[in-house]
Image (cartoon, rainbow over all chains, first blue to last red; front, side, top):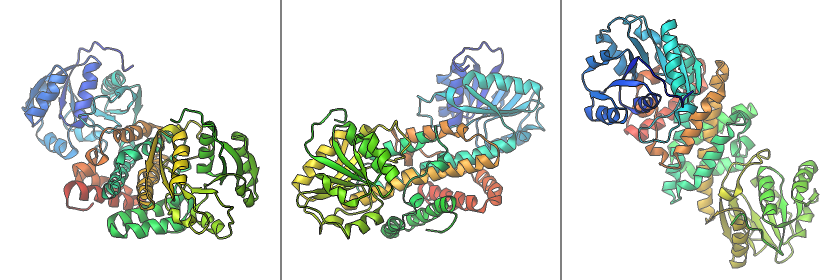
Length: 269
Length: 269
């Protein structure tokens, strides 16, 4: 119940004031959690976020010990480095928000550890993100941790799922395709528009419709366009035109082929 | 003004009852146009659409001469074949809806010809498509044709643009990237989910957010994820896991590289 205010005796530190830390801290704060500190190596980032969530900014990594629950929102490699030097007082709960790290990265440091993975694309500037609709995947090392994870996750999201480290890794890969790679397709379209004085905004209704279709029907059943129709005349014309842009041409060929393989069980572009 | 009913003396034939013909006929009919015939080589398709727009189905190609305006919603190669055998009485207006064909394909057949290109992904089943928000691109051979094109287009869409054949071709290529190729990314994500018993619907909020972001900010300024962060540890892990699926691995590498090139000006996955 994301809209309900919790009265939580447990306190939280958010380590990392990047895109994920930003949105997670704000959501937890709105849900009534007491965020004692925001840690970042960049004090300006820490202060900006701390001021949003009534917390105290710090660049002293040892301040993470100030709270009961420590949520790491750091890049994987930074977190792994930090974990080499960490000393954790007994009873602390250590959580990360990584799609790719197992929870066992914590197992020599504490008995209470886990992962809280919100499946969304986060940008600091985007203030109208509705956290309650975001699927949050949780995994914990023991009952105590799972219980607090459920409490944390349910306080900010209406869609809380259990997922083990292996499932989360595949979820993350699927998310890279569904989000970062689809966004890269938009980027390439933007590039083509820019080169030919076309307003990219004219493509937005098409982009939104394509995305919204996934709510009702699996994308594999909803493909359209020249590759799906196997319209070789159009594909040939597009490839000819893209000769001026070899990288775009290669991308066009390989994705067209990927559509062929799945829709016609033969052929290549 | 898509919501306004027009009293139009000119009559229309729609040649083709596929995805584009389906939605265009319905939109024009709703806007008050008299659609005399629906032509399709498949009588069931023609009848289904005709019954929706108070029109008469036909498989006789010569019936296209029954109206003042003939709108071809056929695949490019089918249209080009048909045009070889066509005889058109003087004064008829010939329009196509193709992204890839110039309007000059009509120039030996009539003096009044052009293109009406709605930039959207169309599927017959999708009845809640709002045509008024779809950008429609028009190009005509003379003033008379341009005038009727404007009338037609403005009766169904609030976003009517002029575009010549060359611009439309690049628009179509950009649309393939923005729509068909982004949908293919969703398909690959769906495939990964299926292989690992993950409900694809859990990715939908992520897909929608990524698409909605394009309304506010250019996608090139809005990329996130491991490739954008140049997080080689995560990318390496993903590629390792995808070794079991060589085609997905190749796609992951080439799109990751495409993000690198644009965000870091170096490197490859």
